[in-house]
Length: 388
Image (cartoon, rainbow, N blue to C red; front, side):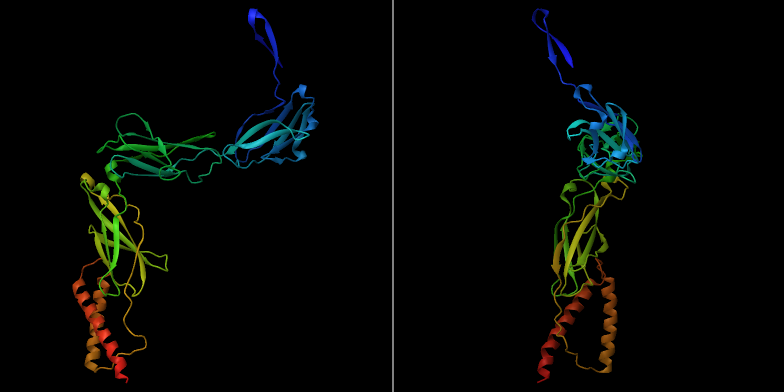
């Protein structure tokens, strides 16, 4: 190929520019999974190549000769049937080669699915000035194509559409709005998904920032023993600092598990207190404890609030039992046996109702447990000498 360049005094200079050795058509097509494609590679006549000098590769793998067809002296086609989704979002590489392996031309194949409607939009605010939202990318999720997600929002009754700018702040499908949000006014929020095959828009979610406030987990969680009581632990924590200056109520939950188990037990009846006594635990056992917070009633909001994340696990162990294995209680009279059985039944009831964070009969229960453990210690000290 030759082009002419104007020079001084209108003299023309001829410059040779090499032409592309070949072209592929269609160039960079976008196709739905399962489609078929016939692509053609046409070599430039100046390359002194013919259709029989060509072959095709897809993502570096040579395609079988049976899929080729010579269309004319300089054009070789290849037929691709039932295409799978692209192995990379930047497209699959379809390349036309000369006999010696040289690359003559290339084309990107974008094979995938149109986006589905994003679902499960959830939002929360940490300081009543910001908002973070996340969503799921439809039921199938994978489109095999680069898909853009755009979170948009506006005041419900007026105002223009706004676009969130800070993406991937709480996971791959999330966005953070850091400021300039109004209170006591509902927002409309939605997500648009787009790729080379189309656009899908989520349902609109309506919310007031005050109704979706959450907090960081409770801070300074401490777990300690309750004296020598072998089946109890005391849990204490401080309220999250972020909302201490705002008018709100908080309720808490505790979950705990033994060291060698993955099963958590949840205590729901903590209320708004910042301490709790766990009862009915196993003696001499390590427990892991976590606490979380749910703020509600902020500036009169009637929504239930959003639970924070769980605090980091805090570990503590209950005291070991002081009883000596293999030592039996001395036999008592029938009257003492009856009394002992009745006490056991009564305090079994107390223990059952003191489970979790209830304060029912807790002082009486504590006194009885201390007395019982002291009596066991005294008896364990006396019994071995009785055998002499």
